[in-house]
Length: 448
Image (cartoon, rainbow, N blue to C red; front, side, top):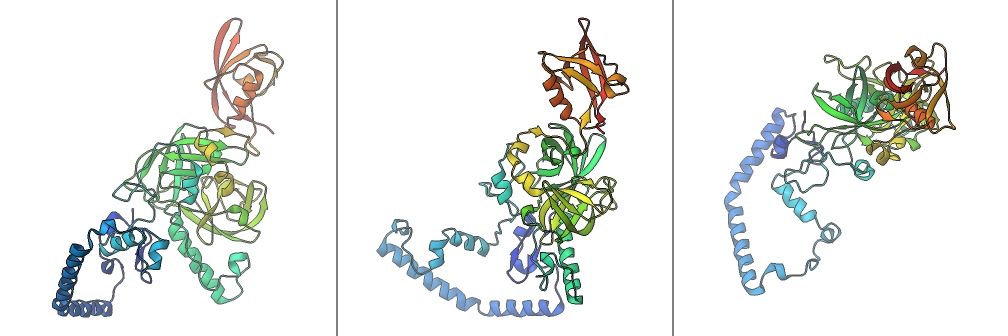
């Protein structure tokens, strides 16, 4: 799925496939016309005419260098910082080797993290990573701002035709990049969206899309390829969830450039991407443009129109930097709430470790019972009529010994286990009744 993007002004690749690495830069640009081809032919002819002269010059230099070695001794014995002819060399010790790499046609991929791998590509890893390498990774979605957007990027509305054109062009550049990192997330019978944020396959999504830690999931990329993933931790207080792609790619995963949601203000323009209604091969991801309506504690509110299936998808600023994750829809389809990206970065180590905490706003789960919190066991003292527990056959006086596979030793532990579920989850409960262990399946309810 890799493509070569060649920058004419600098002669450098922003992101290239292994085939493009070995390609001459003259052949890298996908656009060429007759005048460019004719000019290239003239240059090649001039080089052929000057070949013999250049050959003799190089031969003389080689002879002088050989004589210098005989009289001055090995070059390796010279001090490492003896050169003063190139001041940039002391500032950047690796500049010489990088220049040699460019001369030999070896281009270092921008997406790969630093590694001893000679191919320059970092495969996916099963090791737990801390936040630092994730945040430091540049990503591929950030783009430069169009000329004339100085007012617009601060949240102003376009007033002239030039500003409208610049805004449209800027959004088009961002869309081209962000679709590569936006994914469809399939977990169980539900679908949502997500965004890859690191070369080794970490995916940000909504907590209610991920479900629970350590569940099998499937991630679908923009090209339709499917990869296995595992759900990790989640902060349900803000609806933040994390996955990790477990399949190893041929090269590092394409991933988003991270922004800072703390820098946002009301009126800022943004781009929302997702898979409304779930994955559709012929359609792919869908892009909507909007603005930030409000910045609330733990929440960004925008007017980007979102529906079911968009949950967990990314929100970008006009520079292509990730600033949020779609969470839930407000009273109107154009009033949508997103998790600020800062909520992920500041708790990233907890999310990677598989920790889950908090309760989803507006999604507090219940099973319809009251218990004795003074006793050392989870004794049910009351069952609410018509509630999830009564419908499952649970009675007053039962003692809960296991809930969703977790042993329960107190009513406090039972409450924590219930809070780790989502309304609509089917959970197996084991209760002790008259010296017998009974198994029941109940459906988690939603607190009104």
